[in-house]
Amino acid sequence: MLVVYLLAALAISARARGQGGTTSSKRGLVYVPSDKHPEDDSIWDSPTSDLTWYYNYQSTPSPAYANSSKLKFVPMLFGASDSTSTSGPSFLDDVTAQIKAGADIKYVLAFNEPDGQDNGGSNVPADLAAQTWIREIEPLRKQGVKLGAPAVTGAPNGFFWLENFFKECDGNCTVDFIPVHWYGNFEGLAGHLGQVRGTYPNKTIWVTEFADNDVSLDESQGFYNTTSQYFDRLDYVTHYSYFGSFRSDVSNVGANAAMLTQSGKLTDIGSWYLGGVATGNKPGAAGRNVVFAGAGLLVGLVSVWCLL
Image 1 (cartoon, rainbow, N blue to C red):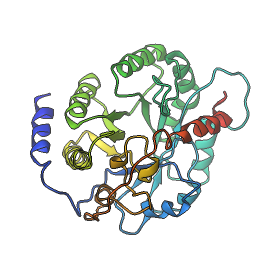
Image 2 (cartoon, rainbow, N blue to C red; image 1 turned 180 degrees about the vertical axis):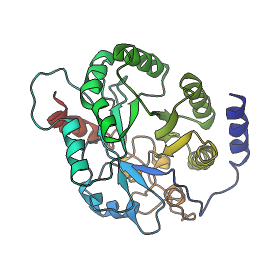
Image 3 (cartoon, rainbow, N blue to C red; image 1 turned 120 degrees about the vertical axis):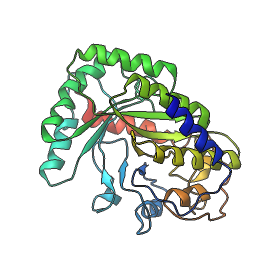
């Protein structure tokens, strides 16, 4: 724990320094393609981008990246249903079919914020999640796939939910890494990450959503610079994906967290995240609750293959 706080102090001391041109093999993309602006898809898979992996809250890859040689797809089982009816292939069937077709599936994610129901949470009871995991996710281990634990929120309830999940699993759910979500300042994130590490000391960590929401541009940029440097120093944080791959006028975490301006140009944070230098492009005002209006659509899409 002392090491965690020493690294946090070093990261804070570097906050005032700008960042540019730094790359990291840990960086990935959390991305829901925009029907309104499909031209934005190519930004994240450009020849100069340092991103190596992505997820889209679904079990199948986004068409824009289906043939990408650089962005490796990480399927996610978004939610679960206690319905006995089926209306399509299961998550296990979907992922197995991709592997048999030659896809390089090395990891999967599970249950997006099952302890929450707002802003994209899947709101899945721990017992149902455990039953679904044992049936749909655990068998993927035999195919060499590494399994991420349910991606709970950064709220205290997330720890309780995850504890109950493992109790319900009764030893039948094996996880290889712990995904983390965090919205808030760096000091809170560092403390939360330390708590996760202390609770699951033998697991690596993926930070699959993070941003300092609804703050000034200086604060948002300082948060990004500090956290990215911090994650790159921590050997147990193996992957991270900043939540901001959308235009600023549709951001539900504040315009200043977005990696694109309202006209689709890379902001400073967006360019830094891709390994570039500051652009000077300022994000415009955001409209609340727009980005994850798409989450409702995701829930609907997920029901096609998630009704088990």
